[in-house]
Length: 133
Image 1 (cartoon, one colour):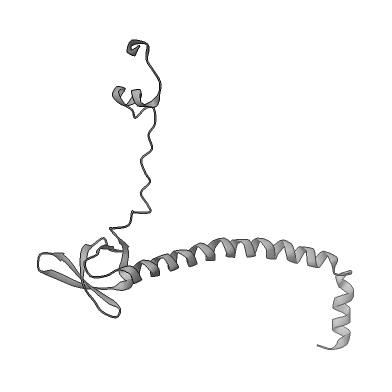
Image 2 (cartoon, helix red, strand yellow):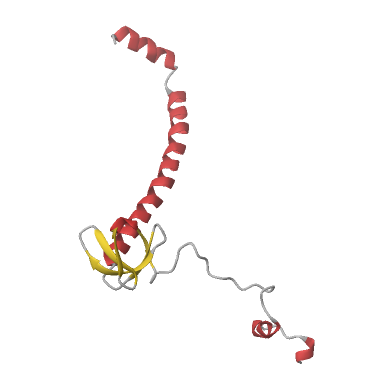
């Protein structure tokens, strides 16, 4: 590119103030989207790696395929799972979804609402009925 072409391009820019603003308008949302997707994925991978490091012989696990078993032997990248009496399978460590000792993150604790309470449970909430006086 010769200097005349570069000078012509810079002269058409009109000072450069508008182009920086339009560049920021594009880059800031893109940066926010990247931040909001990459950081949670990194945290999830770290949590999974920590869980895999803590697993040992005798721990009960659930695989990504839904198989439930007890770890009987640990190799470099494999676990031996006993899924039934005298039935042992080998699985990759990366296929372990979670340990049954940890609560399932997909399950939410049951919330107690007024509609779900029975008459006996309602006495525990501090409200006194007229016939209980």
